[in-house]
Image 1 (cartoon, one colour):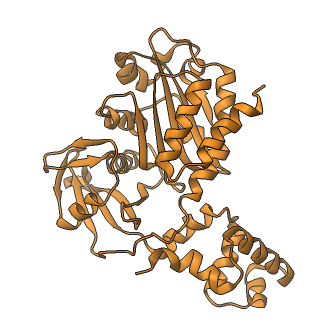
Image 2 (cartoon, helix red, strand yellow; image 1 turned 135 degrees about the horizontal axis):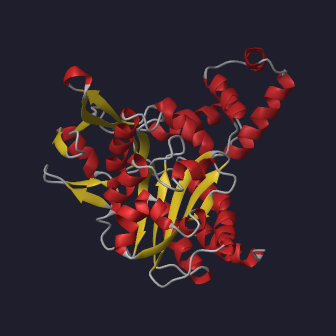
Image 3 (tube, helix red, strand yellow; image 1 turned 60 degrees about the vertical axis):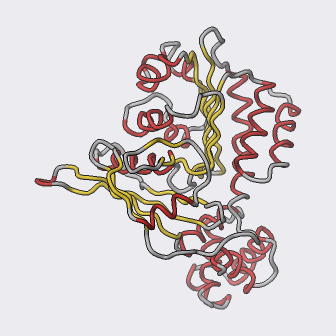
Length: 359
């Protein structure tokens, strides 16, 4: 059994964080005191697709030069304990050695990458609220260290929901949020081997606005953030039939505007896989509204009510549209007002559908 104090010390540190990167740093430092590990990767994820986005904290793994190979293995190879599977598991935390019966070579990620880097075991976690992943964690022990045990799995599992709840609060709009900026989309092309081959000036401007993090060099004369590389890899995974999800992330820039990055695999001659096109553009209002509603903890039904309020429908028409009573509608609105800390329909529309796009 995990003593509550072990969780409270870590969560208290997380509550003092000013942003997601600060949260990762504080939580990692406190966790290492209770659960020794040699290196770690903490990353935010897009709650809709589960793909990694900014920020990402890489500890004691050099400059993060192996990040691209790590995420390529995650998305394109058959692996034990994929984050996608952990996000849906009853317990969103597991150790590699325990999952493989102490035969980690069963994992392509271990046999091709981690084993050669001296890693002995990896403990993975998805930070989730409900079925929405807001972050992922990988903790590594190097040669000579013990395997991660059930008590350590339980410790990290108990942190999954509370840390995810804190992460999603950082997605809420704030007074310092920037406007949508330039409206022209940025375009970045990758060849069939995953090498970036061309970029337009709009994409270069957007890349200059992205926060620091692990990146890889390219022949275009600039370094590409691992989040964009991962989105392009996901598009290739979809084209190969390995996934039916979406190659898409939302990312917050240094001036706190929201961008959407989405990638797709184009077709070449004879239907053969062609290059991958990655588009970067300001996030659409409806797209951001969904994530902000999740950041405030709104249920799907509460968000439906909020959307109809934004369309100007009165309570009776909302009730008819959703086949519920006006009393139930008022109950949902009361819950929405409480969660979003507002007191009127006008404030609701501004908070969920307008605030992130102020000029």
